Image (tube, rainbow, N blue to C red; front, side, top):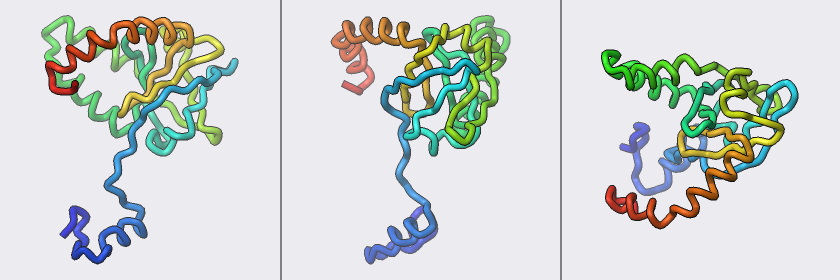
Length: 172
């Protein structure tokens, strides 16, 4: 039996049933870098490549390095659960959880795939007319275009050092 409960006898039955029912073992990855405009109403389009994975509703919050994080609801639930289980007696953990959770807002994608960025988050990330949206596997990041360029230029200069450190954890 396959994990879906469908008998897999090598005849292609499993593949056919998965195709017909729309069930797939493929994981969609949110990867890539896209430039978009944020309009005067604070709306920004989620790249069409990401819309299916993000779904109709998502959560946007303060990210690290002055960008915003956008999570699909299922992913947000896991992150929020982990944050809520941090020991509240430790100030650094309490402060991080408070900043991350209190800064979060539910957003819905409109018919054009746009989300509304709350004023306080737009201000936090310094978003102007152009933004960069990056796919970070399970979440999106929204950056001020100029800040992203500075950040990316700095990190590109450190690629060798970063690769060496990643080697310590078995990635490179």
